Image (tube, rainbow, N blue to C red):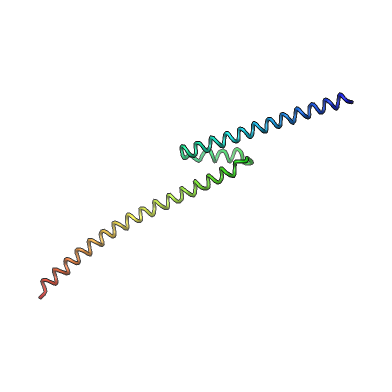
Length: 119
């Protein structure tokens, strides 16, 4: 009986050790993948590795951080598009203002000339 109990305990302990070691390796792999995804994100501005990380490790400790980074990145892209549109509108407005100023100057000259010609 003692031998059977010892054998069961041995299998139980070795099984738990294997599960724990596998869990540590899994965590290490997840953190390495997250680190690599962040490096590519910041160096190359490529969000694809972060998206892949989120799909591959949905229960990871770092998944919320990855989602937050993606959300900030998407928001930044949206803001850049809005800024580009505003810059284009500002350029168009500047051109319109220049045309209007030229028209005002031309009309002012015409008005002054008409005033000189009419006694």
